[in-house]
Image (cartoon, rainbow over all chains, first blue to last red; front, side):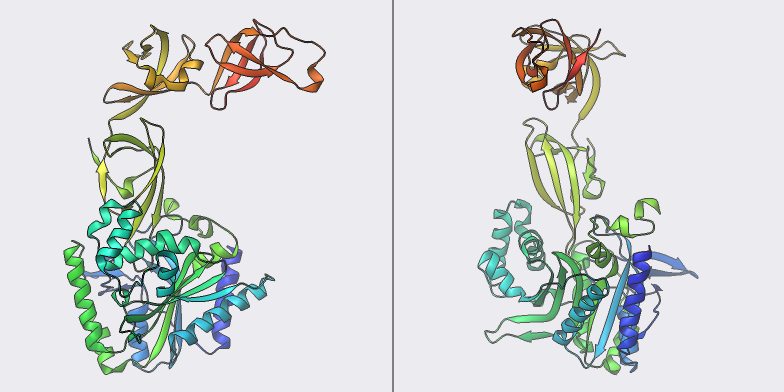
Length: 308
Length: 189
């Protein structure tokens, strides 16, 4: 608990020095995330049905659209059905946005944050590496994840001993292959994997590679092979965002998952104009686990889920 | 039999996999932040004893196996079958040599074992962790040789052979750990 308090104080100090303002967004709201694989916890307040927020992203983007400038959120978020040695249905998230930055500038700031944190704890410097999503797949499977056929990915999954994956979507197959065969072999230290496939863009902008591959300007950060943070060069096009949300809802319907109301406030804010910015969300509990070599998230929480 | 979904997988749960009963050893929840959640599950095939790993999509469910662990008293073997009795109902069960497996070298009449029943028939037998057995055959004891900490093979009344210290003789009763097959100590009468 002392170490958690020290880490939270360090994070707040880090952003204060860099003039990034803390914002305290609602954790209970009428709308929620449409992402097919993230499940909100439904609640009820004042007779309205509402959801515990899975991330402060939508509120923060409404603030950004109003011209607030650089901001961060450090607090609780909630995700249903997530329980394991690295997951708890309620966890502490650090999310921040940098106006006018792109994803590579933001990655450099994450590197600076972790570097300074280790320095304050008198720890040795970490190895830092950057690798594109495509290079990860070329190294592990000798295939290009942006160009190869879906059937090829399904065949790889089946050959690795997952026969039931023969009909899975492109995004799911890529996730399985990445989690099972690439993540465990990432180098020690801090690893930035960038340029995720377009099918996993979520709220990131996309760009075209020279060879015609469409990739998303999304990155993930791994610390000693544990997924720590996920960031974007944010999509600012309201119409495209709307379309992606609607596709999400269709995918949710196809997977027989609950439908959630679209966030019209966010849509209006984006129509009014979200400034060009980069944002990232970092799991604070996992950072604590990595700093102190703790294997189970329960041991960095005051009260793990089994004791709540 | 009931179906179990991945979020009900607990270590010890018995399920059917590819037609064989399996016991779940470990269930790890894996989820990339934005991706599909899955469960990396370690299972022991209760027929072959082999441990295997399988990845399920979270929410997938599989059929439970009609497998039950019961404490039973070992009665005798007739050469073909090993006979056990439920101490409360006095109901008797006969286990094949395959089911008894390596446990047979530790089975002493009247001892209580765990018999795993699959669809009502014994699938495997787990002997008590520690058994006390009499030495029926070993080289003569060499007193005074104990300092070297040497050992010699000794055959026990149930047929097992274990390494024992040199000072032990035929007729001595010793305690053995059945999981490792190691000598634990001499039992004084």
